[in-house]
Length: 470
Image (tube, rainbow, N blue to C red):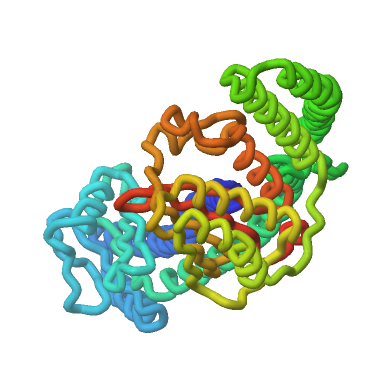
């Protein structure tokens, strides 16, 4: 969840910073250009005043008009030489009164021509197109009218290089980018702290829920920080877990008490059946059937008591030689297999360790091997293999019996469930349920699948590392 929440917060904060950074960068560029434009307008106003004296003198026929024009031309040349800015005073017919350098002409079209036409109309340049740092050949052209007696008689035009202005804009942008990067780092750190604070109760809750799911019913959510809503959720989870544990404890107690209390009346009933059998003819089929059902009921009660104990008792985990324990259980069942005419073979690892309760694992292996031998016909084979696969050690018991259908595979291991095709086989339907409960208490599991061409593969899995410390 953190991997999804953290990028979301980072993207949102990056979007906010960019939304602030772009207008700031544009504003900085516009401000730098506006400073240059204002400077050019001031210079143009000074040249326009000088041009008025020249034009006024020419209009009045004064003898000093030529001297004034030379002074104006000299002033323009010094200005262009000092600042590198082209400047010219152009009459309404585009002819130059004075200019520097002497070869410079007004542009025939584009931004320069538009500014000239606006100046002829009496409007001073105030908003030329923005020049950006990547426009290496960009020029800034400003035009100001020369007004005499209320009429525009000429136009002062300046064409400024933009290298320095673009460099200042770029420097300002670099400062903005550095500021945004620093703000992004601060925001990322804040997002880390925020997600850790928000998700800490969620991680604790997830660990507690996983513990309960794997059979550790005493798992609870410890008091932690985080938003008040998640703290209330943790408190509600603990209350729910307490209620569930209490209900399960009552259920286990009921099953254990019922199975225990029924054993004495059942034992007395079977004793009376035996006494009654003494008065009946030898080989009576009804009494034999009653005896069989009585023994089956006794087995069911014993299995119920074992199941209640298995679900109630916590596993005593230790580092166990899984391969050695499996070989020991196979050796114990081999005489029974030979009696049935079934071969038992061992494959896979001969030495691999895992964390398990040896007694619980032995009981589970006994139940699985018993089932495999029970349903494997004479002359067939039961294969037992041990392998280490990732974080688990797998003990696979594969038989060559009739197997199960896809629908039956979904139900195998349920309490009291037995396939309709196997009702005549001895058993209570609780053996695999007991095995599953014993393994789950230690972080293990049971899995079932088909064993082509026919048969069943049962996989007993136990963790390779201690599940209570991982």
